[in-house]
Length: 278
Image (cartoon, rainbow, N blue to C red; front, side):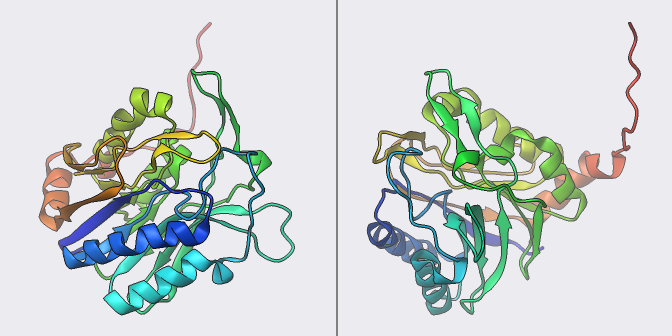
């Protein structure tokens, strides 16, 4: 891993792909102007509505207008772009994946990750979300061994499953991406706590690009895009409701320092049995 600048883009995406691309492009250009090597977009970067409020158009990854636009932009600016997620339906699929796509500075798709944990919950304000009715779950975590860092991928609700991130860290992750569209009630209660916990317990940087504000169909998201260091310190944070960019230097020495002080990853002992007393 080398030190580099990372950017998290905070968006207020709607239900028109072209409009969303037009919102993203100048932010990516500004992040590149600020010398970002890795530019991270949130979940549902190019289409955001409350589930079931309108028909959603799903296409294969390679045909997605947002992916094509980001490929051209990455090649033009010579940056890495992590699209937080798109709805990707490949040939023969009944439902799409909620898919992250990592694009390299040549404009090629470096890898993709399909969200494993789907958001089937009822939030404290009584709203029901059933992501499994709209998408199919992925099966495996994904680690990108890039020239600048080993980057572990995840999406939003994955955040509540620490074993996902521990598996990535044990496989070599130094940076964890958590693109999200957290609801306002769950965000206010848990967003900062969960993200800091994932950073601390794995001694990794966490980059969490988020959706913000009110979206078509009435869905409301929490914002507060974050970059967190391996000690759990918040080194960059966006506001609650305003699209924009936050950047921070991802420091190789900081990862090494924290891991030498508290070497949790080398202290892991597999737990295969639980003693139950009655």
